Amino acid sequence: MTETIGDIVIAPRVLEVITGIAATKVEGVYSLNNKAVTDSISKTTLSRGVYLTTSGEDKVTADIYLQLQYGVNVPAVSIEVQRAVKSAVYDMAEVEISDVNVHVVGIVPEKTPKPDMTALFDEDFLND
Image 1 (cartoon, rainbow, N blue to C red):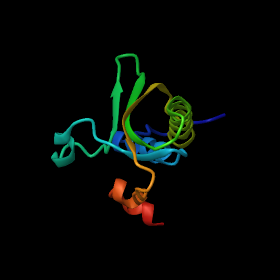
Image 2: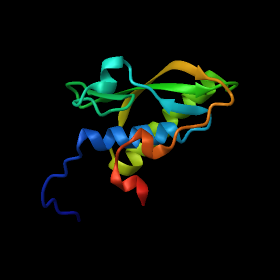
Image 3: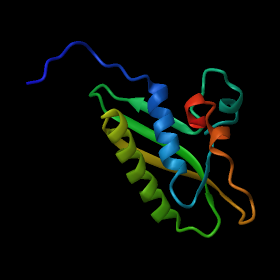
């Protein structure tokens, strides 16, 4: 028998970070990319290419804007990003994402070094 002591509230920023890390760990993903130039300079938008929306029926939808490495199979990588994001968010936060929309905004040339994970998210826990 389980007893409910109180409510657990997960901040949307936590879900954005989980989504972003899961997406960038997929082989073939180069980096996340903001959907608009103004998102890069806005202090209110910290999502780094991850945009979560909630509908009235408690359904969460993720829109992920990313760049892929040259030479990868775009549909296969996109499907793997969808799987990885849904799995990671459910495993870590027990939140089910109804839709994961992957927006490929660019392909990066072969010899471009991949950015560091800590550059993508200004979070202290990534240094552990």
